[in-house]
Length: 513
Ligand code: B12
Ligand code: SF4
Image 1: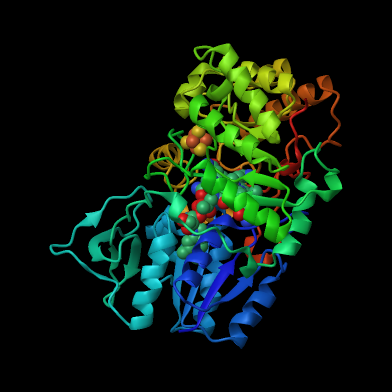
Image 2: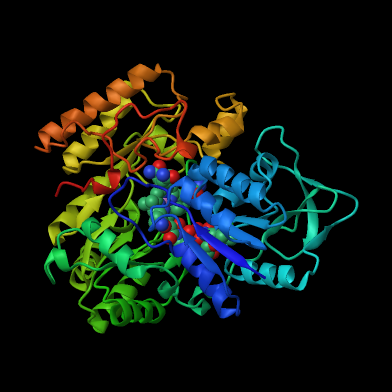
């Protein structure tokens, strides 16, 4: 069976590239199960659509597997169409949120054969084995039971049984939904992603410029690699979705994480690790345990992680414990952490279901600054409750904390509370068209506030300018940044929601410490 895995490119004109951790896990699982495959890495090889199409014309495949974040819907649609145009009998499998969060949509608007729901490490292997052996993928459970969804009037998927974690098109065109697979219980048991499958050296080279200022070695010597330490999150914010949404929050043991870091050091010379998690440290005690183990391992690395403002900012936890953790994080090599303010307005925080208080933010930034760790934070403009005053309130909070945020607009994404709100209230009527046009949260998409589009943008930008000025930061007018860069290749051009400020790359915005 000839298999092709594809790594799409989310930000073609961005200067950096990140190793794709999700795909890394999936191809490693396939390899360990004994499957041989080709990898078309559109990202690192900067392949134009024409080159991608040429590859499909030149090679024959039985199965093509690709996955991406749902914001890449338009390109994925084009890609699936191209595969089916040149190889109609090839089985197309789609994973990650572009499949998992919208199975009804991707199966309706493209010729995708199979969608992998959620965590794919185990499912992909079972699926490939079944396809290889020509075994059935499952069957409809009679009587037919449609599965409710929030994706407009599209035909629903139908309850089925068989390989868990897939939705597939059966012989009579029904969309058979075998249901979610139970999440892997011990993620320690998953093999480390085998980066030899990718052009790892070029990724490391192109990731160097993302490193924050280092102290353990000159920053030009930074060799940045990702490690996934946890899957999922314990919270349910109404703007957020990730593929582990319905799975429990799972953490790897410090030994397993340290083992992978050592492997990355020895094999690839890594010395700077991004913990690519939704939430790396959830509670103080386990975080201390983890960081103690890192200190003891004496790896000489730097790292970044994802936390929430209640980790160090919640005054209900003893102050010494919070500062103690921050000090240990610094000692272990932490340079920067990402956590979201999102809004300083209590009503909006409640609508977001953030379950944090605005005041945590200032406290956390203060503690991190005290120990010398950079705070990277993001904010969202445009919840339905947003007014010019709430925008000011949020940005004044950034100013008080002396942090320039990574700002963006509310981007309703499928399978989120705000998606349901947008659909139910008629802000999104044509799902296919909407998904074709979305890019990044820095690109204005849907206005669900009572302000006009112009007022929302104008207030956001003018208040951001005040923060930048007061902090003495000069972004050359690019107050709102992203890597979307108005989408590049022809299959990603946006027809509307075009970014109103072309100067972007939020990945470069660093909290002003
Ligand atoms: C790294 C990262 C990025 C990188 C991606 C680079 C890369 N090559 O990986 C960059 C910086 C480009 C990025 C950008 C954005 N990101 Co981002 N990112 C992440 C982050 C921190 C880590 C991703 C990761 O490695 N996950 C760990 C792996 C194990 O999980 P996974 O990727 O989901 O993979 C599993 C499954 O999805 C599936 N799978 C994955 N790939 C494939 C492929 C196939 C063939 C199959 C079958 C299955 C499959 O199997 C994997 C293992 O179980 C996550 C947070 C997180 N932890 O997920 C956010 C996250 C994925 N990003 C998110 C968002 C919102 C964005 C942006 C839209 C933000 C913005 N600026 O607006 C942009 C999109 C840019 C664009 N132009 O479209 C959301 C996802 C939203 C959604 N509905 O999917 C997340 C979950 C963060 C969050 N909680 O909000 N991001
Ligand atoms: S926004 Fe962050 S805290 Fe909220 S659910 Fe998503 S990952 Fe968790």
